[in-house]
Image (cartoon, rainbow, N blue to C red; front, side, top):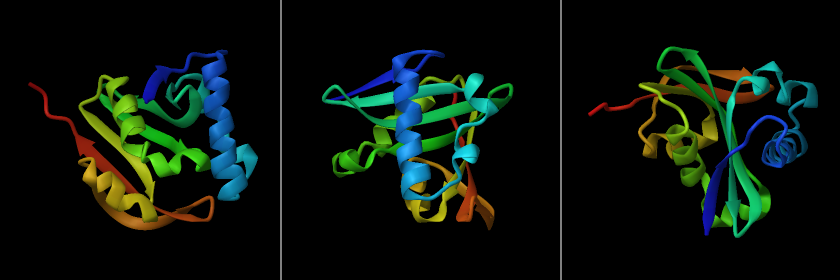
Length: 143
């Protein structure tokens, strides 16, 4: 069973988010550690997904303008990928943000995943930390 938690500053949940990010981005994808944790972490909204009580996935979002949030640092720890938790962590971070528009910078191999969640790719492919990315956007329907 999956549980989504807001990870507050200084909390064990936020430390678990950082540990997942370091494992996925720094250890697996070889992103320089100084690029992974940044000044935006202090003001970002973070979520932690626990699977059967264990920290399994994370995402963060930063408000770029009123109603416009940029999602990033979406990561599922390797031992939990077989449980297909990516959709749940994305739903968790979207629910945590009062957004009309979500933006994200998707690694190109994950574009199909985000398209299935309603995101649309925009602009050209570019490199970030040596990894091909593409900007994506999702407009939220308001009632």
